[in-house]
Length: 396
Ligand SMILES: *Cc1c(COP(=O)(O)O)cnc(C)c1O
Image (tube, rainbow, N blue to C red; front, side):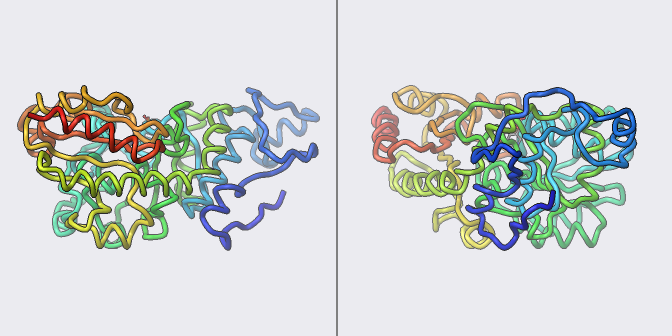
């Protein structure tokens, strides 16, 4: 079946329509194919499918029509030739690394990447002879000078979570190209609705679909997007090793993509309103949000992103007790470390997401005890303001 070319369409249109292939039933909304395997018309056809002579479905660990629709839609959004869906965001990162790295290779990442990603690199990939070190995200000279002969992959999250540091993706992609490394961008915080790293020269995008792609906290999933050649490698690993996405989850994420753009705009607008308001409060030392004019990399973020996403953090002048009192005084927002949900969440990074670090590691990462992170949801912003005001009212 020939695929409609969606490259001429805008991001909202791609999110709503790209990748759909109607069946003969003529359905308007995409169906869920809950089948583990597929039947063949003959032994000859089965042989042709297995040998790869004839394209088509065999088994849902390899391909599934619902999962494939989600993949085509997300590939169109990210501007990549191809996408493969995975059982989680971590499965996406594991698959990309397992498929493209080998013993003796080195991963150079930014500081402060997702906790499980750090653990994957340092505890597990290290057992297979894959080395990892990390440096400050925004320091391009440092990237240039830290790449070793064995460095095969640069891995970043921009903006970083929770301190909202940003790197110039285009400039880093040029360094990666010159040094013969792959640049992998975890695009979970901005999503393709606000930032498209492949167009800026990145080789691969990985994403946790669990967050904004779903947007309603229902399913766990992930994806890897990039060139046909690289994704073929990742797909080969995935169909063999097995962390594939379930058709039901793919359906939830695919429908999530239809509203992704408007949701990200709404998350961004509310987060900006709150960040500006929080910044004026006397109990606040600093607000970390790329949408603020006071953010040192605001210009770069405004140029590289089409919005600033829903994730913001702020440091209270007090310590842990003040931060905890702030969190405990709220009554509407959810106390949880998740992000990307319609329901606003609040967390204390120093004792949750970054709780496993030593005091020195946490200090070096800039995660102080007074830091509070809010993933702004889709409630009325006035209600969120009133709820956070309860936190401020509880400050001494
Ligand atoms: C949540 C998250 C992941 C991991 O995704 P899962 O779906 O939980 O496996 C990776 N990167 C970032 C930035 C995340 O927020």
